[in-house]
Amino acid sequence: MTEYWESRFRNEGAMWKSEPADSSKFALGLFKSEKINRILIPGFGYGRNARLFIDNCFRVSGIEISGTAIKLARLSGIECTIYHGSVTSMPFDNEKYEGIFCYAVIHLLNKRERRNFLKSCYNQLNENGLMIFVVASKENSLFGNGKYISKDRYAIAKGLKVFFYDSDSVLKEFSEFGIIECKDIEEPVKFIEGEKPVNLKFVVCKKR
Ligand SMILES: C[S@@+](CC[C@H](N)C(=O)[O-])C[C@H]1O[C@@H](n2cnc3c(N)ncnc32)[C@H](O)[C@@H]1O
Image 1: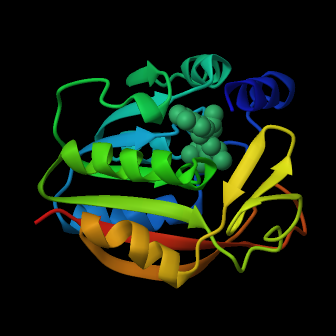
Image 2 (image 1 turned 90 degrees about the vertical axis):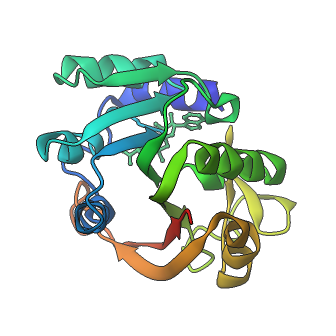
């Protein structure tokens, strides 16, 4: 996993350009409506989504497995705390966060890791805090491509394994962690001209 992301960031740099994903803008609105300011971004990348929250005066910390992605974030002027490591080794601090925003990361983990990751996120969330996960959907055109690993999980490239969610698996995995909403979204791919949008699921959990 580390090698796959390291080599991609080393070879392609800021591969999704600098504009945040539209999902981050929805998340920003949701967090603001709940007066959330202190957030954790696991799978930080080089910070294209984090910057949106930082520019809106959020206090942001991140976790990222690729040292090169962290260097790219620093080069672009991002100064917030970014822990270098795997989300499977959480927690990295003793903080409680008001919100967690995790874009396109949980589906990279295996079943046990996904469960432990959700538990770790939930443990670091304040009461009434929100966790937002944007996850791969079975409606994505890549679903079923590559080598079958286990139900709904495929190796779609060397070193890249993806679990594709449907509404049943979302409910199964997130219901213990306060799920309040799951919607299908089509995320525009603005960094490639003419590219079709990507089918994802936008999952919101609230800690009671
Ligand atoms: C699909 S990318 C999304 C990046 C970022 N969320 C964004 O939208 O710009 C997945 C990111 O998660 C990181 N990542 C993958 N597995 C990880 C893990 N186990 N722990 C921490 N970060 C991980 C990758 O290096 C990459 O930056």
